[in-house]
Amino acid sequence: MRERPPTLKTDHLLFFIRWNSDFSCWERIPTICCSNASSHHEAAD
Image 1 (cartoon, rainbow, N blue to C red):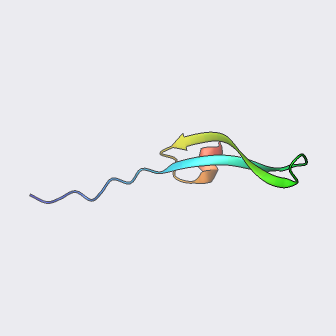
Image 2 (image 1 turned 60 degrees about the vertical axis):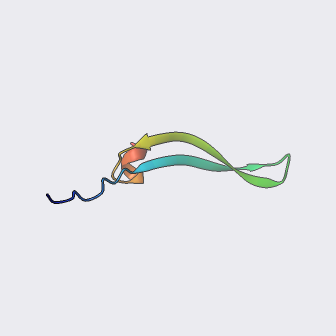
Image 3 (image 1 turned 45 degrees about the vertical axis):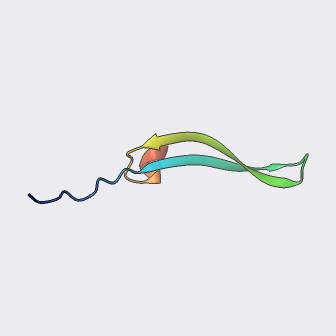
């Protein structure tokens, strides 16, 4: 019996970056998580 190739699951976490003037630094803000998209472009749609 042949072994199956491993199943790959792709998840994408999309976020945006904004300047936080209170702390004078950049912060990353998650916006959405998408499972099984073929690319980050598809995840954003």
